[in-house]
Image (cartoon, rainbow, N blue to C red; front, side, top):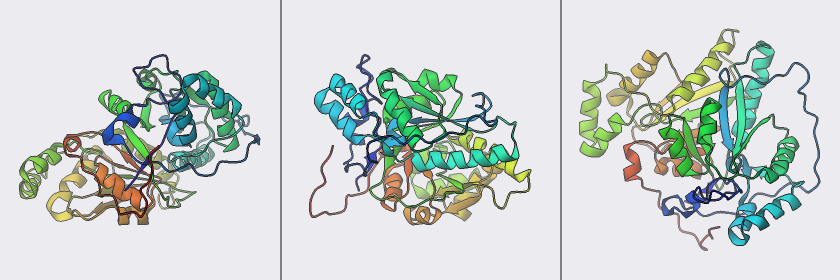
Length: 386
């Protein structure tokens, strides 16, 4: 199938004087090339400014106290047209185009429903704990030049998003800023920058825009995780890749009482769990606005017990655990309807996207050496790549 990477109109990291969004490296990498459809219809020009209730006791948490989500503008909004302008006409024409269209808001991108769900959780946390700084804090991260900031701000106001922290790097790497913000999760369209973040110990994933998108809950944040090489290390995955399924089962049964090491997104699940417990403390376990899922290809009886024991020993839990024993994940994710699903294998990311799930690739572990993609379905007319 064809996935549309979320875009953050950008120049390559090598072009240090480029000033138009996320690195273009992912567009040039054949392993990350996907066909693009035209963006969804944008709102009509002419900005409608909406009132923002920031004065009535609303405050901004300190980064060290918050659960900080750094989101690239290419995954928060749809910027395919702008990316095309940059690639075809160059940086100066791109900047001119952005200024000329700064009153035209961008359409929502793949991370948009996720960010809206974070804000819904924040609203409920503020009601229960008015003075607490334990909230989601959303930071917009972009390679864009400051000239583009006006359009981004206009877009945020148009969509009534509560995003006040921007990081506009003008073509420089954002990784140092992510560490300064105490980032708990970084979502981008640039797979190279995602890998760089992971190497620095920052939970990160590459987001994609599916050709169709399933409606998601407006009242409950739903986050789904793969197990190996996402929540857990790739230790068991290495056994499977090197020695096959039977040896994998044997290894897991022999080591079922030995904890798995942590994976790149273990810390993010831990952060979600801390916020969930704030709702539990107010008697809201059954109607908590955060719900987490483990969706793994492991089998329950033969290899699932080690995963569950590891989570328990960490003091973590997921609200639901689905052990699929190798069955496709897409149909299950279609029922869950998560705002985001994390997996280390593009095969599963593409399978989820086929069913309309917003999926994010975590390029971590041994599976990156064995990546394979789903075979594209036959089409009467080939799609064009932008």
